[in-house]
Amino acid sequence: MEKKWAVKSVLALATTLLMSGTVINSVQAAKFPIEYDNHKKPVKGGTLRVGTVGDEAFKGVFADILRSDGPTSDVAQFGEYNLFKVNDDYTYAKGGLAEASIDYGNKTVTVKLKKNAGWSDGHPLEAKDLEYTYEVAANSAANSASYNAQLRTIEGIEEYHDGKADKISGLEVKDKKTLVIHFKEFEPEIKFPNAGYVLSTAMPYHYLKDVPFDKLASSDKLQKHPLFYGPFKIKNIVRGESIEGVK
Image (cartoon, rainbow, N blue to C red; front, side, top):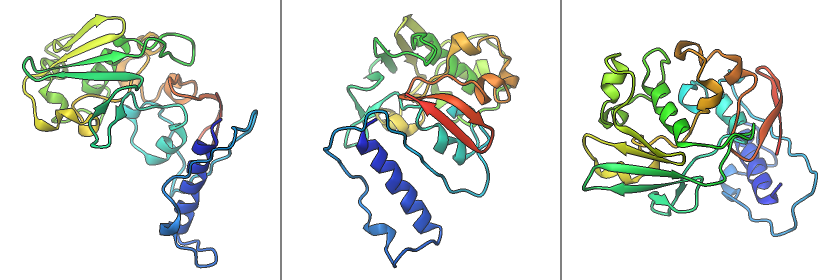
């Protein structure tokens, strides 16, 4: 485990405690550095314990596009991972689990997944997972808050949402690691990963394909035994109370 990551988490927790009204020796939260880079060697076999502060327990829906509470995001962050890296100007960068290429002339965004990216059960992370994630976001039965005006600029997504089509015509699985997204129109903010036009997360199609869309959020596969493609996977969950993860 990298110490840099561990210290960031501890500092974030300390800042949260201070902001919630617990002041120790009049220390101001604003004086804490945003991040601290520890150059010492990582601790082998160490355990990081992280506490969160909130008004309610986490609901435990481990799929970003179906989630409705912040506490679950706090505890899921160790297994979930943003697919894209971001430049200093918040545009798409190279080197993430996925890279995005924008073709302004053809109004397409091509998402290419890293070759060795995979799920915590050993199955590879594939373009089909990306396509499925858009289908979950746009399916009316799934009731995802991610279905927004930005996603509605994708070709065929409104017809799919309205039940007039079985597939989203604007999604083209080019190969196992490549998804091409065709848009009806391009807005200037298309170049920003967090603008909502391109989803920055994925859901495991091979694992969830047999679960009805209206049952996804309440299914054991998302609440008790979720899969992740990030640095940690879940070993044990005490519903609404704690999560134990392993690398």
